Image (cartoon, rainbow, N blue to C red; front, side, top):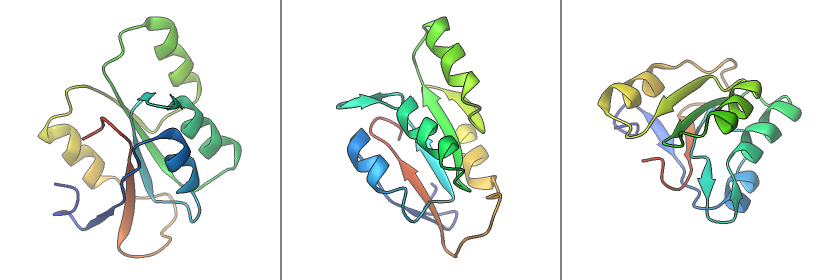
Length: 114
């Protein structure tokens, strides 16, 4: 659906892969918190620490309230609960990046997000 909305979708299946794809910074990251080699929060933490002009949408099914609080402290642009439905994808597709970097827009989904 994101590709149909004009987004260039680049996939990353692991934390290491997602971190390596932040240069150049994508317009948006669709982030799962549970990655095979680490925690998705590390991607959000890096985006915020480096001041990247990237929106981060966290998509999670994790019900642990303490972990949810940690994620919220990192200020994701959106927090969507799994399962991600068409309305959630539409929300992402309609987001405008804070800084227009290039066209087409890039979104980096991580494993389990879509």
